[in-house]
Length: 442
Figure 1 (cartoon, rainbow, N blue to C red):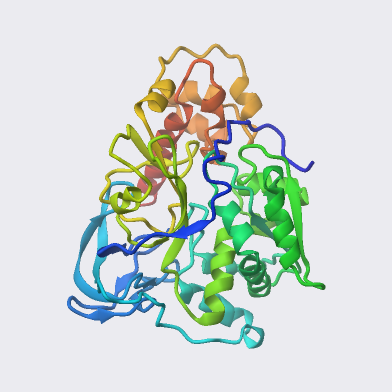
Figure 2: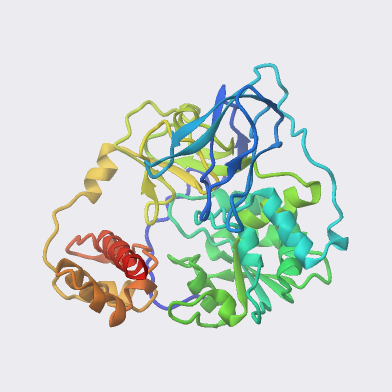
């Protein structure tokens, strides 16, 4: 079965939600729409306090090319334009909208548009207008990935449907329940980027999703579905490209340099659903799971829904020791229960004291067992990088040991018998390296 070298096999822990259909979460009394939900410049508010808005109406315009608009997740009135806590705990500008209690919350904004008659440039603009970003967690504006630099070409679109992180089942349910939208999104992306084929990769533990996608593909579509080995981090773009098309992304380079564009399956589903209707992204599927909730599941959640409101409907009683946004391998701890759900949040993982205590163990010196070397999918030497980080030898880490090629998947820390927090060391080191480079350019 197609795969990449190295990687790890953590427990999947998907049983609680993988067979549960997507359910719609109730609308909160107030949504908080941060104007920073993506990589790049913040969006700029185009509404005023006291203004009535309908569900799907644009409420913020892009703040530049690497930026996307925001749309009203509910029909209601703009209560205020203020700041709000982002998932990482920083304060960002946000629009607060109070929902009308009697509103049907239908999407009342949008108009059909003919995809077949649109040029590549028109499609890229239309994708930006939807506000869609990478929904696998990166939240990078999708239209930017479709805008190729001069002289660059993409012949293959790789679609990531692996969802290799433990606990997460968002993409799995989207492929099962909305395969037509995924395929439509693949057609749109293929035309917009000028590719000649699409390969959708999904892991072997999602055979039902692979079959659903194959059934949705029309005869003559240059779209194929490939099943790859279930392994972490199979869904990382460099690993998936290697497994599916056997090409290597150069160190420090991007997939487009080898003629490949990579997109998440949930991103394609939203583009396939929204773009033909000329509508914007106002909700997304989120897996809410973990030992700390009584009724885990996959939920369609309006963007801007407070985290506390979403958890209430899964039987959360406040007994969590830690709440992780995303999966346990690459997710981040929630700064507060008051933060709103944004475009980049794929999952809410609620862990109790028992699970956190199990992972909180004493750290010992490196024994040079090379387990981390065998696990690293980028073929780095995490042990040596960790030792250099302790000595603050950041230049050596970067130039000799390729620190910046690490994408912080956590495989090294997962297998380390000494419980060394390698990923945390690398994050600090990379942050300091970037600061030094920025200071040198001033």
